Length: 81
Image 1 (cartoon, rainbow, N blue to C red):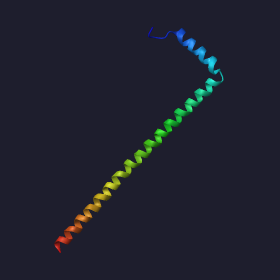
Image 2: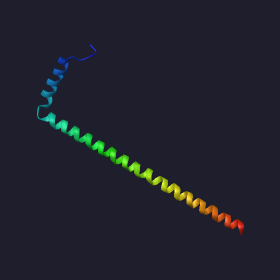
Image 3: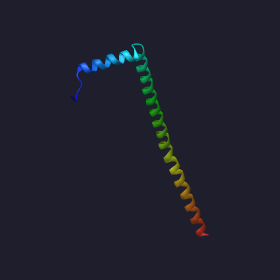
Image 4: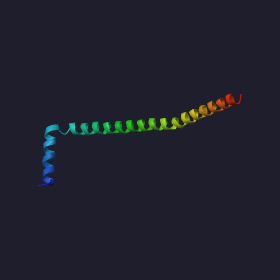
């Protein structure tokens, strides 16, 4: 009772064909394929945006480290005077 036989799947196929018709099923499949392609391209765009922020992050860290070193040098010169 837990698994479907070939006859079960054939009955389901006949019911789907009667409900939707032969013309509408390829259109539905095409729309589904378009949706999947758009989803994948959206995921790629998101990944590339994340990669750009990861590439930019070390530059900002290096810049803040350089400014911290400059402030430390400034403090040392003030102490010497």
